Image 1: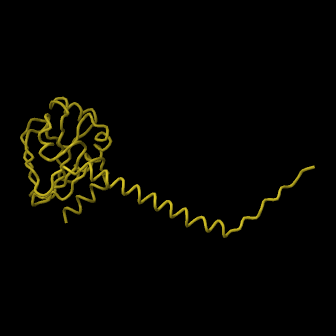
Image 2 (image 1 turned 60 degrees about the vertical axis):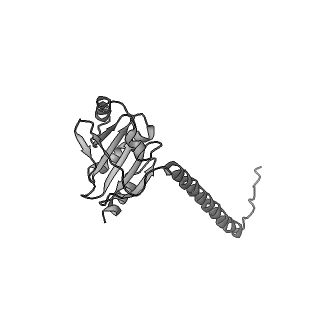
Image 3 (image 1 turned 90 degrees about the vertical axis):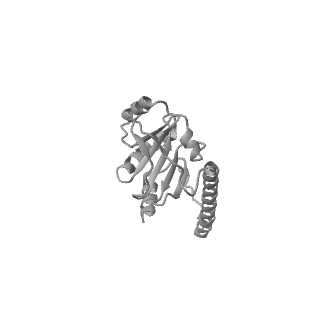
Length: 180
């Protein structure tokens, strides 16, 4: 003999009342995450230069002299290091941006030019790279870590600075905005 179990009827008004509360909790959690992420971003970038871009000059990885020339349009200046795991994650984004926008990257404390060249070949990267073996250039730009990204406008003013991972779409939008 099988016993039939009767499920208690659920009042649909109880289900509806729970949804707004759940949305409120999700909204609160989202705001909290955004506040924490913003605070960390601010803390990481607090020493980065603002205003007029410092001099950016030196030798490229191929030995050619380089000096930042921003008069043609906005320029993306990206600091990275070969030993940095976050930099490795984002290098494809920077390399893709370099196909469409003026970009100079700075390999800071990444070893000698031949080591950086080998790294670029190994990871199939074609972006232009300025050497900063000692970290002196990064220091002039106020960096305490990598990766760090700047967008310098036609007038030499820094329009954007950020520390940490940057998405390709985020960089494309910022470069487009800077070119208006």
